[in-house]
Amino acid sequence: MKIKLEELAAAMAQSDVRQSYVDIAKGKVMVVADDMDEEQALEHVFTIEEDWEHYIPVPNVIDEDLRGFMQGFAASREREDVKERLQDALQGSGAVTRFNHQVRHLLLKPVWEKYLQAQLIETARDWCEENALEYEE
Image: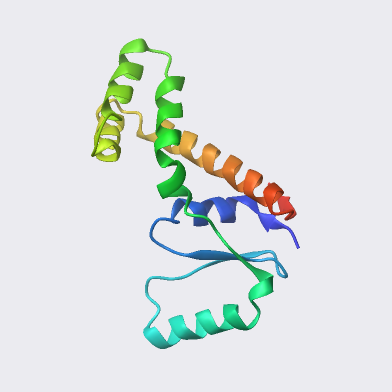
């Protein structure tokens, strides 16, 4: 079964707050829902543990790669003043908050979201290839 890159990218976009798995037998991305009660969460965990060789955890892309995505976006801006403001926002602690503020202030939110989605799709593609998983665009 082929994994849909958009589904995997969506799971990766939430990877800092929700654990996800790829069911390699079915080609499905499973996201652990926030609204699961304790019994449902335990059932979910036991299902995965009983058949663990068919599940691969989705990596936490947001915590690992978000800053790099932001730096790439900043570097890709054509206007030097915009590039500089975004790069300055990424210095030191609180960089994500400052970057997001600058993106909104500079009216770049739709462009940033499109860029981030493309980066997540590319990351999902690379991850599938690294794990020898078939995928579809």
